[in-house]
Image 1: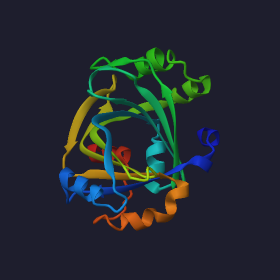
Image 2 (image 1 turned 60 degrees about the horizontal axis):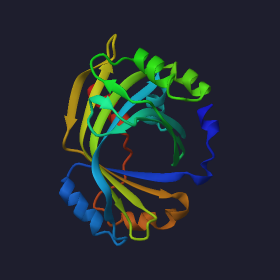
Image 3 (image 1 turned 90 degrees about the vertical axis):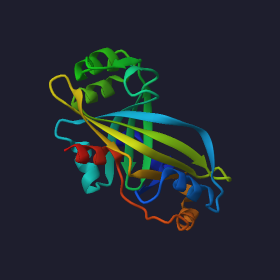
Image 4 (image 1 turned 45 degrees about the horizontal axis):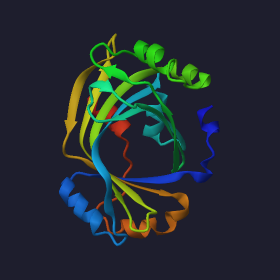
Length: 231
């Protein structure tokens, strides 16, 4: 049902590069030396995500095998990982082949601590956040699977057609147990993820600009990586 909600005519490409041989400072220099003249925009911030999946991990499996239609369900917020979560957003990230889109729904703020649970999420947050009824019903069939967090920097080309995000200092928390506690923690300070984002009408020169990157395009999903690393 979720895939029928989107018209992918305005979808965008998200090309990912998983890099371990360069530091974040070296990566920034590589970005700035690109002929499209990228410069930093916005400000550096910590991005946090709680992922939800079906009971048999359908979304995870679809991303692992590379199905043409793939879905990720997550709650995103910025700033501190634990404590009062302000301005959280429920995101449905849907991909059809190489094109992707997001649908976002604002959620009421909540507290992320040892008392947090799937029951609280469903009854106190989802049902009281003005979500569509069909979506609430879909979410009742989901479980919590992963919490991740990372630092993100933002860059934009001089022609404003291409954006790059640089993610590093990745942290993964396993969610399991009766109260879905964040038990196991893993820090990944070695890998850096560069993501190139642009609308599909600008795909013609994207391959040319990526030739100036001294690393290769990779298949990379923080959700899949987090599940694999913790298990």
